[in-house]
Length: 80
Image (tube, rainbow, N blue to C red):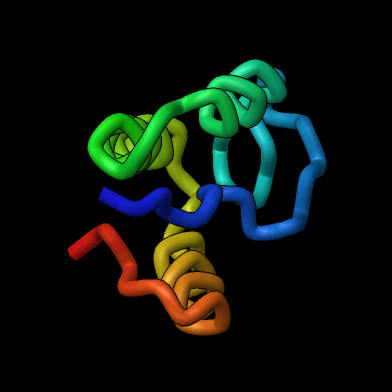
């Protein structure tokens, strides 16, 4: 399975208790995502990140931004 694009949407401002205001990842999570091997672990990471975004609140626009990023890269969005 091919790699999926990073959940980063190029905001990278770490407030909210160390979480990025654009994607909700911490700096450690950004590093961890890059180290994941292949699509299945990356999809699992994205699913967990969506749950984290719901828990934190305020990330309603992230999925639309991520879908645009996937489209721009010519990759099908791995999320529903």
